[in-house]
Length: 77
Image 1 (spheres, rainbow, N blue to C red):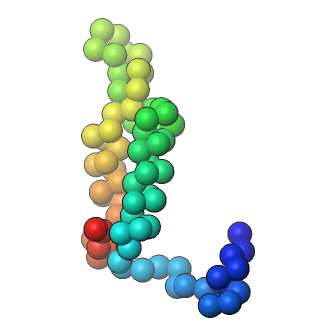
Image 2: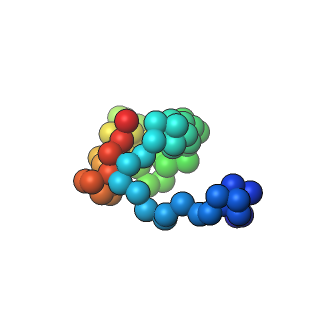
């Protein structure tokens, strides 16, 4: 996707070690929306206690993987 600001101001570097508060709020909102609608249920199932049937998303497992995947040098607000 091409943005007008990229053509006027130039592209930002593809990697940064600091995530702005504004960007972090957007990322957090997008992830929470997908956690709430069950989008991550296949990869991080929260199974019913009575039978091995997924009934939601296990957020703890999701966040453990997310934290493991983030570079230690990334600073989040």
